[in-house]
Length: 72
Image (cartoon, rainbow, N blue to C red; front, side):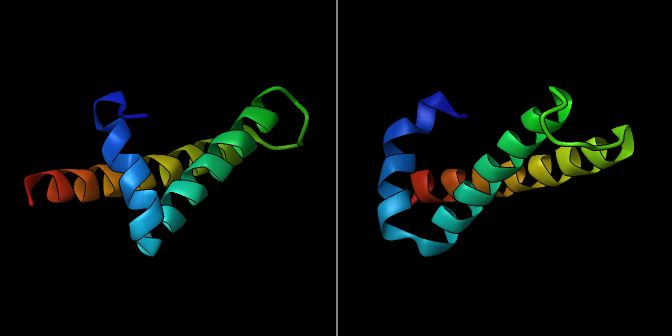
């Protein structure tokens, strides 16, 4: 996710607790979705779609934080 911000992501994960929490939530949702799509965890298509929307919202928020931090 966001390879152009790799160094900044590493920095923010150690200095910004909010960023770290969002990043971890995004990764947890990503894994949960993968498990559901591969039928490791049971889920309906609606549940998967809902989680994908949550994940996208987190990604948008992370991107906003990265842009703000890179402009500073």
